[in-house]
Amino acid sequence: MKVFKTPRDMQDWSEEERRQGETLSLVPTMGYFHDGHLSLMKKGRELASRLVVSLFVNPTQFGANEDLDAYPSNIQRDLALAEAEGTSAVFLPSRDVMYPQGYQTYVELGSLPAHLCGLSRPVHFRGVATVVTKLFNIVQPHTAIFGSKDFQQLQVIRRMTADLNMNIRIVGCPIVREADGLAMSSRNSYLTPEERRSALCLSRSLDKAETLVRNGEKNSTVIGKALRDFIDSVAFTEIDYISLCDPESLEEVAEVSSPVLLALAVKVGKTRLIDNRVIVF
Ligand code: AMP
Picture 1: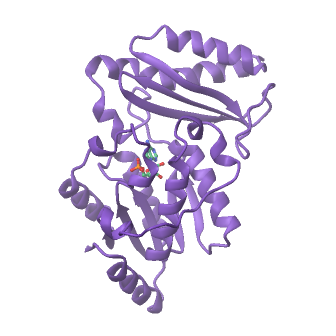
Picture 2: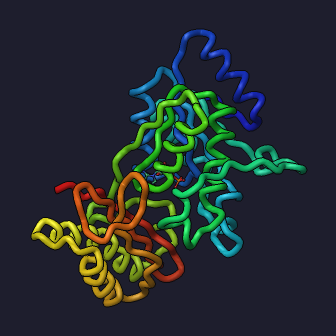
């Protein structure tokens, strides 16, 4: 497995592989791998002859008071896991190499970032769209794989790729969960044992909402209130948002129709967690 630290070296390798007729898939990550990341790598291996994994904690997608400097990292372990998944090359750039002195170009979308996580993380999706564009230009993949754990991110990237005529197939993968239902996340490592128990309220809320909808409740306010009351009753929690919305536009819906996206963000202690489910009925 090759490890490239500069865009030039990564680009040269990708160009040569493409010239030789290989197909490339890319899994962009911020590292500290769990089974969610590994599931994307498995998909990437299926869909192309060469898998590239990028590992970069992208500063432009973090707000000023967020966890950029605390973000967990274990690069040696990540490299071993990526290699075990059959990765051909890892792109592991420094911040300076991605955003050198004088950097000033950003990719911004219109309405998609104005919902869900974009409301409490105003610079987040501009950072994501920018770094993913850079990664696409550097790695030149045929296919890129993303998790639907970050549902809004996946929609932002699908939209951006279509809008900017990027010749890259975007593939979404299902959310990988712990045995008790908690969506896997590198940020779960921040949780104390008590907070870890409280964190289950996210996946339980998805179950509760699905049951309500299947039992005929279609009023978003009623469903939202039931979830709010439930989460408020759980220790250490603070709700950022609970949204029932259109899975494409992410616009909130007053009346639930199929399919509907239920997305939520909850702070558990100091850790902000997200989860979602598309309910089809
Ligand atoms: P991150 O390293 O957190 O930026 O995530 C890198 C990629 O892994 C993104 O496409 C995420 O959506 C995806 N991912 C993160 N957690 C999960 C999970 N539990 N299941 C599936 N994909 C995930």
